[in-house]
Amino acid sequence: MWMIVNCKNGVSSYEIHRALGVTQKTAWFLDHRIRLMLEDEYHERFSGTVEMDETFVGGKLKNMHKSKKPKGTGHSGKAVGAMAKTIVVGMLERGGRVKAEVVKERTYAVLRSLVHENIHPSATLVTDEWGGYKGTQIAHEIINHAEEYVRGQIHTQGIENFWALLKRGLGGTYISVEPFHLFRYIDEQAFRYNNRKLTDAQRFDIATRGMCGKRLTYAEVTGKTGETLEL
Image (cartoon, rainbow, N blue to C red; front, side, top):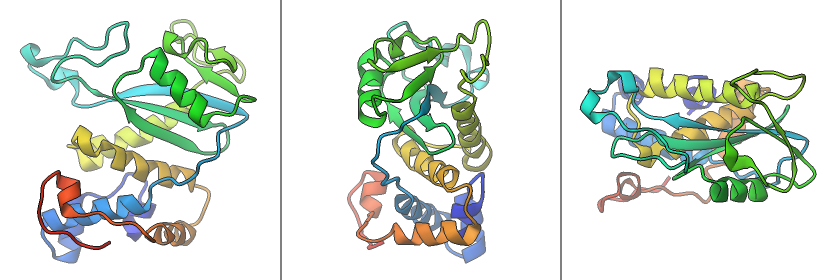
């Protein structure tokens, strides 16, 4: 638990299995149960300046055979093809917290709903030029990445920094993550980011408090029926 909570790039289930002397399968299940503890329970809407952006998570296209490469995402914002990457949308309150979640598409309807649910009407939204953010009914600043990346305080570098941390863990530590489980790894990285200013001991204390009233069975984590265990 201490390692997962405090290691910036996460900890592989193989490392846990070697350290504890259990099977890799047991270590993998244990890791997912710990990630459930780290689930964000902060429900207040973001205020001030809020950066919002999307990213795509999945295998590197350059490593795929030409016949298997996805066609990408069209102007609709929908991922297409059997090998299409998973879309993740994130929001960052400047100087504060981050929140990210997996979505099926990055269309206007999806993005507008996320803005309404998570961002206070008095906030200022900062995004790139993607058209799905237009008409969100709150103050909106746009940075066109085809022309510039920073214009005074108008930029999305904060949320892009979080994407870098997330992908470093996914690509360097966990290597292969099924889209079905991706939200758990996002919760893990968001927990460390949101508590980045605390000490290791303080983060560990907050994490252990998160286990109360939560339960994850092996059947749930694998999508199969089978033995159930209490957290």
